[in-house]
Structure formats: C-alpha cells, structure tokens
Image 1 (cartoon, rainbow, N blue to C red):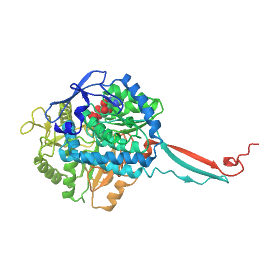
Image 2 (cartoon, rainbow, N blue to C red):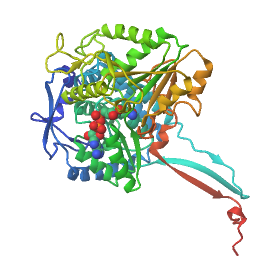
Image 3 (cartoon, rainbow, N blue to C red):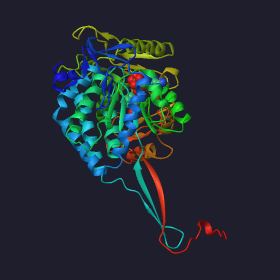
Length: 512
Ligand code: NAD
C-alpha cells in the first residue's frame, strides 16, 4: 500500500476514515452511513468512508458555482495549461496510480498502466483542443449582416462513474470539461473511492501552483446511489455524465430530463464479433481472447457474443478452448497473470447464475466458468473465463452479464450475421473479422452494425482516445473522449451582427 503514501492519499483522512467531500477549499468527512471498500484481490479492507449526503451537496454546489464564475473567464489555452500539468503529474506517478486501480478494481497491472496512459493521452488531446474550441462563421441572408457561432463554458459538470474504469472515464470527462471552462464534480463508484482521491490529489498538486485556477474546479464527493440521485436532480449541473449499468442510466436520464438538463450516458454493452469464413483466423483468435477474457470480462466493451460462420466454428472453438486453457488466472499484481479477479462475490454469483440459465436455455459450456482457488490469494473471486455454445436467440444471450462469459453463435449468410449482431438491446462495440472488402464495407455501412463502435479486423475492446467513444440504444447514446465530444461540455450561441445602416428582417418580412 506504499502507493497510497506516495500519492498523498493517506493525508486525506481523519483518524481511519477518509474524507468524502473534497473541493480544494473544503475537505470533510461524509455525514451519512459508514462503508468500507475491499480489494477484489483478496477481500482485504482498503478504506473506510462515511457516505456524503445530499445535504452536503448543497454546500459543494455553492462552491462549484463560484468556481465556474472564475473558470469561464480564464482563457481556454490557460485552462489547457492546467490540463497539461495534470498530465505531467499523472506521468510522474503513473505506476502508483496504476497500483491503486489494481488494488481497487482488480485489473492486471499492464491494463491498469494502460488506463493511466489513457488519462495521460486525453490530457494531450485536451491541451490541443483548448486552442481549437472553434465555432462556424455563417453567411447571412441579410445585407450588412454577419453570423457566427461561439462555444461558451456550460457550467459545473457532474461525473458519475463505474468501478471498472475508475480513472479513464473521469479523465475523459474532466480533462475536456476543464479546457471547456467547467468545474467538475466526481462521484465515483463506491467500489473504487481511493482512485478518486488519487486523481483529486494529483489535480490539486497542480492547482496549488496555479493561483488563478479555482480549487473547486476539480472536486470529489464519495457516496452511494442516494448521492448520485441527488446529483442528477440538482439544477447546479447543466450536464450529468453517467457511466454504469443501463438501469442506473435510465434512472439518471429520467431525473435529468425532468429538469431539462443534459445527460451524457455510457451504459452497458453486449458486444459482438462476426468471424467470417474468409477471416484470418490466427489474427481473430488473438483478438477474441483479449476482448473476451481480458479485464476478467469486466469491460463495457468486452466481447460477449462471437458470431461465427458455420464452416469455421468448430475449428475456432477448439483453438479458443486451447488458448483459454493456457490463460493465467491470478493476482493481478503478479507479472504474467492475464486474468484477475471478479470485483466481488455478487459478481461471481451473477456469473454462476447466468451459466446455469444458459444451460437451461440449451447452451453447452465448452470450457471455464469454475472458481479458481489454488495459486490465487484467498478471499478473492477468481474464475476461469467461460465459452458457451448456444442459440443466438436464447434470452440470456441478450443480457449483459458483467463477467467473462463468451457465447458462441453461428450464422450462414453475412446478412444473417448482421441481423444477429443487431438484435440485442445494447449498441456499444462491434467487430468483424473478414478478408472480404464487401463484407467489411457492408458491416460499416448504414445497413451494417448499429453500434457506436464498428471495427474491422480488430477486437471489440481497447478503444483509442482520439475517437468518440460510446454507443446507441440501451448503451445510452453518449459520446465521450475524442473527435468532437468536447461540445458536450459547452453551450453554443448563434450571434447575428448588423454592421449596416438598415434593419432588414429575416425571410424578407416587412413590418411597418
Ligand atoms: P452501476 O450502475 O452499479 O454504478 C455506476 C455508478 O452509478 C456508481 O457510481 C453508482 O453509485 C451510481 N448509481 C447507481 N444507481 C444510481 C442512480 N439511480 N442514480 C445515480 N447514480 C447511481 O455500475 P457498475 O457495476 O459500477 O459498472 C458496470 C456497468 O458499467 C456495466 O454495465 C458496464 O457495461 C458499464 N460501463 C459502461 C461504460 C461505457 O463507456 N459505456 C464504461 C464502463 C462501464
């Protein structure tokens, strides 16, 4: 746990209880019930907090509104400088930050390092964006007039995150939110609160050297669902960015829409890969194993459905079963292990229930699914990733089970494969392995994959920050990170300027 000392997280507490309200100006304990977070590695207690309450949110909201008044007038490139320095600080402590992710989320260290790298990358991206918050100039239909668009800071942004990407999702939202001029309040998953304190500390180290930046620009409140609900309901936040299950997203969307706020939703996936009869099967095999078993199946983009041409399915399943047999399951901090633990016992139970249901619905477990207890730390829930052959329309296949279960389905025509790919409620990530240009293009065309992410000859997981990330249907429709996702964090004004001496009306209307 030396990483907690190095990062200064251990200073953020009173006695044994960590602070739950951190705005830079204020650091205080929560006033709600006590809870502890445990490491999925061995079940050991990592931290104790009191939930921050909705009443405490009121005081924080006032600080956020004051911070916004200052931040919105600071030139965007200066806000970019803030983010540049945060990126440098994250580089400096990359290893320690990754260790905190592994401890709380159970990711293997190479993947945790990748997650911190994602934070660093989005900083670089946001720094560049801070000089490119461009609007359009538009020709006017009226003589002596000019039109233009400007993008202005939006207001305090709330970010609610899931356990499985405790740093990257915050970073996508916060680094862009800051360059756009918005203070950001994070409510992290109750399962990964120390990651939130680590990120807070990194940002506050930087803000301490930039007296023009309001401290509350990077704030954190640790709390449960009740706090999340209060945040969604609060008029302070013109934008609530929420990542997690579809059930959570529906609740947040309803509340935020009720007050006509904006929500940016990144919810569950049920990601598929089509393996065509023309596919490069060696390449596909490697992509499948990482996408399906990596992060112990706990990525929103994890490969859950393998839609395989009937002529290649048997050979592919045999090769996959062999590869799965050599996957090293164990302590995520130990070099060489590729599959860490599930987040908790509940997740293990859900996986077992899904496997049972799959069997009842006609599925055959090809390999995996069982708990691993030897050679792994006691107290953690380690499993062998599972492969199940089953019909594409078995109801369980249409649900997201957040664990390493890959369903293998078959198809005969490519059009049928696309139909199977699109028949689930979720629409996050998808992929095709094919050497046929026609299949690849059809997959990406309007009648192809209906997902936010449609890849050719790479797996479903492991997106780069430069693209817009997110998905359709039950995945919530939000887009974060690269491309033009910065616009989420700004408001647009259309300005029409009359530099002539007359007052012509639009559409030629005469009013005199
Ligand atoms: P979860 O829905 O249980 O919790 C996510 C967050 O929402 C937590 O901070 C929680 O406290 C909060 N929350 C729960 N109910 C709420 C409510 N009614 N109002 C406000 N806040 C509420 O999710 P989880 O188990 O932490 O994460 C796994 C899920 O997240 C999976 O479904 C996964 O696919 C999804 N996910 C999606 C993306 C994406 O980008 N699409 C990324 C990561 C995870």
